[in-house]
Length: 281
Ligand code: HXC
Ligand code: NAP
Image (tube, rainbow, N blue to C red; front, side, top):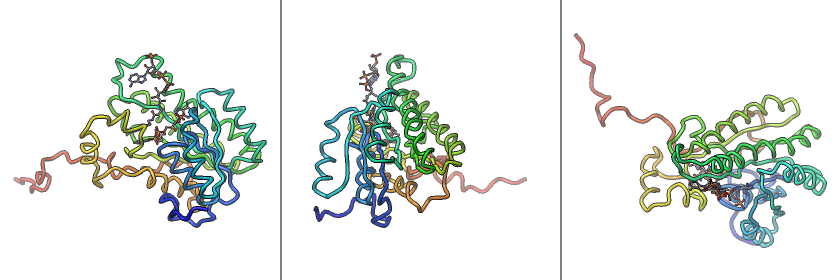
């Protein structure tokens, strides 16, 4: 067993928080998904990482062996409904239940809307919107049968603010937000909570490569964040774990924004201008 410190994402919750629970994290081998996987496993959950590329699974499986965590990996393309259905059936058979579904898998890149091809649109909508629905439907059915379970969807603040260059992702995330609230109301009576987290930009290889690839872009982005920096994937994961934990058991249909204030309003006035006294008479 490793004597490395606990993952930062898990530091605020008791060590047994997810003991006895089985979690599925889509895209759980990289970026935010990886940090959620590490945090959940270190707090007692048995975690299944599901994504397309087995090369993204090796490092977390190695770490799990070293630390004594229970982590498994399955190859899955969440855009394929038949594959998702089969995966849900196999995992329910093998583990008896999947208590926590984290819809984290995503695809994104910057492209002006007028140049976005139909295949590119479909690809991102397929991963983010269809994939979240397929996983929710197939894993949700067995949660309904058991009368308990939780779904956490990862969205982005541009689901409601919009942002140039990401019409595919913003449209898909807006759909996922609507899905979060709809399923929260439909499935509360089955003991299922459905929530979302909307991170601001945080460093992951996937995001950095596609969204702030040029030198200086990250710094410019950081300078716009009221709290003055990007989040780390670990700290975003920590907030996700909070929403999944019993600490938030009366919260459903909520979207927690974790963006250092980036999506809030900006000053319309030049510095000092808004503090001038109004001229009267
Ligand atoms: C324009 C692009 C493109 C780009 C791909 N396409 N990249 N178009 N600009 N940069 C087009 C292709 O030309 C093709 O259309 C279509 O998209 C499908 O491309 P494929 O490569 O065949 O798709 P696929 O192998 O399925 O890969 C999916 C992907 C890829 C989304 C394109 O980027 C991916 O696998 N991403 C996963 C990781 C990721 O994106 N992480 C970022 C998460 S960050 P044509 O018409 O040419 O055939 C995030 C939020 C950040 O989500 C928020 C910040 C605030
Ligand atoms: P990332 O590391 O690039 O992760 C994306 C993951 O999705 C990868 O592990 C990938 O694994 C998986 N994936 C992609 N297509 C898939 C498919 N068809 N089926 C199954 N898995 C698939 O990205 P990240 O930055 O950590 O993003 C994680 C989440 O946070 C996403 O929902 C993203 O939209 C959201 N988010 C990120 C930011 C940011 O700034 N980074 C900001 C706001 C929101 P495979 O390649 O192995 O399939």
